[in-house]
Image (tube, rainbow, N blue to C red; front, side, top):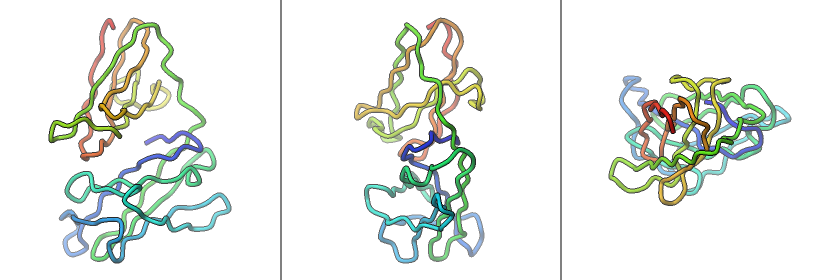
Length: 182
């Protein structure tokens, strides 16, 4: 997952029980005993994030998201973060921080709507526009977050593009969809 420099971003967390190493650890809320999120700061110190209902959410069984602040993405390269919870295997995440992603600049508007599994609009899904099905850099062309109606609009040139929904607020990851002749 690529993160834009100095941009607060929701990042994925998967917690499983230490007893077997694969059963999801479910039901954790921001003030659960033993739940901590840490990341490295610009000076190399380990910072513990103060969790709130605004920066921690369970997307689906055992899959969570945490909103890491801009301070976590202070320089280009790899940012490390980890999440600990009582009776769960420590989750270690690594994110690539990039300077920017080319904004969509075409003439043809194309709107996608992302809904949660219950059918309601997802106001916080990250959507990537890419020039390949995998969605890797340098193929990544733009990233946007859906609005309150679950929609995001890209402006494309004619041709073939792909969009991929990264982890949405309900924990579902999108399948690449080919956009032809917009």
